[in-house]
Image (cartoon, rainbow, N blue to C red; front, side, top):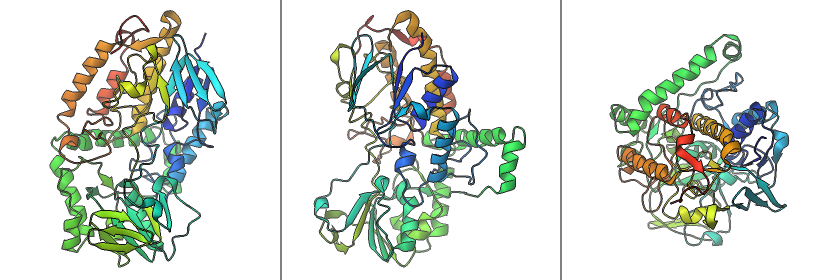
Length: 482
């Protein structure tokens, strides 16, 4: 008998899990989605210019190649359209319960009791597909509530507020800010960009795919597969070594400096935009419009320290800036995995308690003491160089490989000694990466522990997740969780 599966989240991860269950003939699953539509982060992030810095043909499922991409790098509407296409093609939309937030999941010794506003239901398997970038993070700046103008986070864009002729402040300069700033600058009377730390930026070689190119991708045998493979190999062979402080680290820095020099003629502005840490320590911004926007006469880069938000704008150590709109492009609560859900495992231990010093999971998927629970895009699975969709597919395949064992053994959990060995291996691998080079980033907890990123190649991750799961797991309760 097929297990009953609860999937939390209807973004790339949750949909991938649902689709693979459908393809395997397992239809005893339910997808819980707190919002009114699918798409996850690509539903929420609808700010002007929102898009992906991974090429379209790689930022998609390997089993559902898509010839309709119109650009080399996909924009938000096309990504959302692709996810809707996948949900409809594989008939998973009807299994999604929209506007249904999971408040608690507790293991009762045999099943997961999943609680939503509508009540509590039992499932054999719990799959968390909420990802890492779903809860906006607002900065802790005094006076934010006193501002009399309009303010919002970039992931909660106020489309009803026209920025034409406005005096706008954007706080933040990461990937989201780099995408929206050029669009805002075109409409605002004046735009103040408040930068705490500069980011390394490399050009984005975007291009449109015309009708003939799209036809070729659709009908020429092997073309789309070959193009996808080329993108993947380039990312693994060139970008990953830069993050592991290998042969291409210097090339990445030279490329970023040349891009800055080519697009920002003012040496004073260039100096303020030049980071003092190695490329890759924070996520590298891939964009070709960000720097030109900062050179516009109606745009000012502000590097003074923000003191407070006032009723009329923002006050820094150098004085006040009067604005009527504030956009917080300040990222997400990325290290608080699965929050605010309360997840309680075997013996009544909460996941919050287990992860008090930072989230961790075997393969980024499984946690000792939490039987039959699997996390997609979990701890230490984020990438700085390749497609997270690839990683999600590896994780889903691992979960699918675990399911056949449940009929014989009942609930299974990863062994504590396997988790301990995994932690040691991660620590050793992490020591080689650039992320520990003294910068602050969304990859790290307040204590400096990197909980988000995968420190190896994606080919290694594929090999590890493809191993038979049985040696790493045991029947729940047959050993002590740690």
